[in-house]
Image 1 (spheres, rainbow over the protein chains, first blue to last red):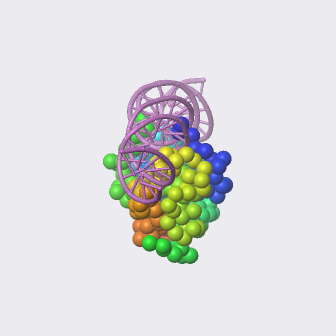
Image 2 (tube, helix red, strand yellow):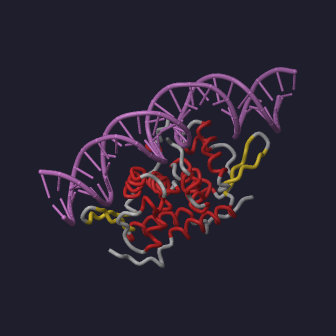
Length: 108
Length: 108
DNA sequence: ACTATTTATCGTAATATTGCAATATAATAA
DNA sequence: TTATTATATTGCAATATTACGATAAATAGT
């Protein structure tokens, strides 16, 4: 079917999955890593940096914007993409909380 | 195309993406949350807990096993699924390291 | 051996994702 | 106005994912 049955899951589950899904592509990981590395906005060169065609990059940026982990500000002809520090931290907290095993006791 | 161009990305990028991709489905999040909650192995009842058909659950378990975040031990007729604490921690560290923004300075 | 139980696999339909060429859009520059 | 430049959108082909019915495989109990 290809269609996830979101109705049967909690909002938290759907949310976590949506975040992870967006992070689940190497191009999007690469874009985020690059944004962190250059410590500034990207206006342009992402296509050369990543190595995918411009429409493909544009699509990946759209996915990233969907969960607000980046933001894009129009700057004349180009668009400056930045890390959305606030939302990044929220995402970080959600994932960290989910992955926390501290109260877990092994049975085997 | 539907085919990710993994060759153009680093192993780290492909690895992180692969992990995130597996976590990118609410059923798999739900399975992991349940495993954590019950603090023991699951032999059986996952189908009732999650609410998807048995073959679908089996497929999701296979995906989770692919990144070793769970392990399945055959126990007679049934299979006992457990959190793989060691690998869980590795995954946790990978994601935590990736999401660490502490050295990042905003430009905007 | 036969049956029941549990999980995996196969086959398949519906939908989603990835990638790119072509084209559209929008803003600036000449 | 007419380029030029940068990004988005459209359309499409190839592949992947999700879900499940049917069936297989493997073990336990009778």
